[in-house]
Image (cartoon, rainbow, N blue to C red; front, side):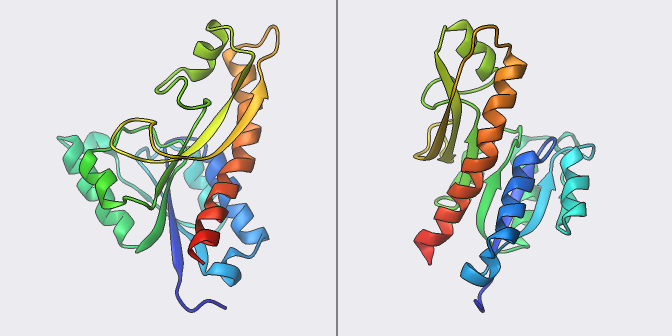
Length: 198
């Protein structure tokens, strides 16, 4: 058993399905015994995020830092960092966290901040990735787990999954196909992070 805990803090804004995929993988694969790694907390910028209830049901501590309560991005990020740092995280995971973070925040967690993006980066950074892939006539789409840097969706690629774009796909059907892969590659990328540090 590892004596030093390696805490994972996951940030969400919505359903929390990727958060749950990571938490379940950690539990099933015994990350706590192998590396001392555990999902210590889930923090959302939205009090109505369904993922908070999901985290609670998985026995994970939750917190809400509502971005609308702050006058600036910097003030929000400062409070968010304080909440995250209370858990002394080895890794901070952005799992559908719909906020653009300040360079100061990104710098603070340099080397231990990862995100998942629903496209094959460097293609289709930003929003509406599935519709843009369909509109561009792409034959494949997918998801990318990457390190977070100050430039949006540009950090080093840690994992990718590819899915076909099928005739008649809508943004919704493509998103659903990509999401099933996200639930596989995101836990893999987190696992690899701790394997490298072991």
